[in-house]
Image 1: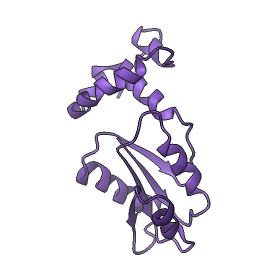
Image 2 (image 1 turned 45 degrees about the vertical axis):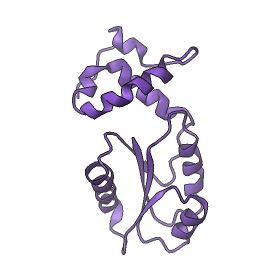
Image 3 (image 1 turned 30 degrees about the vertical axis):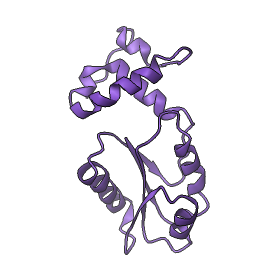
Length: 152
């Protein structure tokens, strides 16, 4: 599981996002930022404050779509991450959001997981977190049939 963010001149906004991504209750395997030729010090800030973040620096601003193409090519094709969580540079998720998303995937089960069999190895870790005492899963009613399962 990796996160990807396409950023342009995000020196001030990006630290809020990265701080929260680093504190997720289910840790990300990699945090990736595509820098779209920023001119405000974004790259220097990332190198200084977040050396663990992978930065893909574009030589010129290739736009949002070009940034996503570079990010997904790197994360999904080159690094072979099964799951990629995508962000704009000013999006700040809650600390437990990734856990909630993964618990929802676990609840939906094999209908979702059949498309990426290598996630099955991670499913034990997901179940350990989702099945922990006091863990809440807002999607648990999907498995019980109370709500229709989404069509993928």
